[in-house]
Image 1 (tube, rainbow, N blue to C red):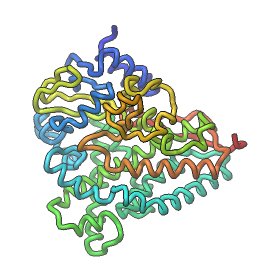
Image 2 (tube, rainbow, N blue to C red):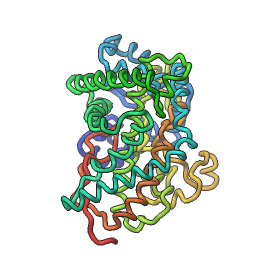
Image 3 (cartoon, one colour):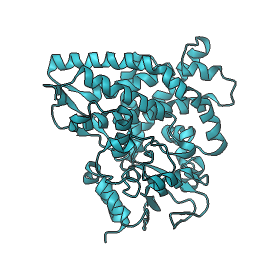
Image 4 (spheres, rainbow, N blue to C red):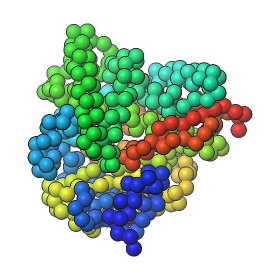
Length: 419
């Protein structure tokens, strides 16, 4: 049998980028947790749904924070603007610092706030479809990722934060440079230098915007945050805004691209209920494929002992294809979520129902923007299909060149006869 380390090496190859799921299946043959020998950066890979869920919710398990960085390489990381910003944000912090920042930001991502945003999101979706339709009429085809999937979530998050719409084109390449480094295979000195430069530019932008909002408040999140009586420093605010903007729309870009790809492949689903459809897209093609975790002490995951301070690669995409949790896991089937997907593991085992995908994580670091991402997709797909019923693939899409984020870099579409 191929070792788990060999399978992991294959996963991060060109073949693994195209189809990671056969590698996940190979890893599962080693059990829900696979120990990785050698001198690599990971002690273990977690692929089983229950094991991934356990790791994400275990209070002893931590994200890789500044203390971890110090213990694994000294303080050299502090000289890199990107690494300093990440480790000063709630996404890469634990304990009280994480709770303090998350409490401040989560007030804007409540279900009620998302519901209040729906009319504005529908108007934005309609406007973007107008633009997509105009490009299709003028050129015969359009890139769905550039003309719609990027613009919708970035414009929604920008409006929430108070970033002017005309600045979004400036944001995109800088956000991409940061995302390039976050991928397991992208951590080279050259990629880090590009990400550092982007971080400096974005941080300067946020500092200027914070200063403006202190004297000229508006109806946006930054104005609200600077008006709060809080012990979150300006530097923490900048770092969290930088990470929040990336995290809040990058996953939604790929949710929209993956969802449209599946709609085009399954035209019979174009009029299906969008709640179950979006949930199945999240399960079947998780926009975020993995996260990293560690613990200060020895922990046991699904019967496997993990040494202290060793990094565990937690495979969200593999958990969502675990046949122990999802019968016929490699089949795209939105009807599996026709009933309420939010049930416990014990209830699922008793009823044979489905559990919610782990695409947005679980536990204390559950994605703040999950409800917003789901709402954008559930609103966008019906409007797209009703306005452009003949939408179809013009050519094969180009996959996004990262394992960390699964989606498409470009997706040429055209309009033909309605199916």
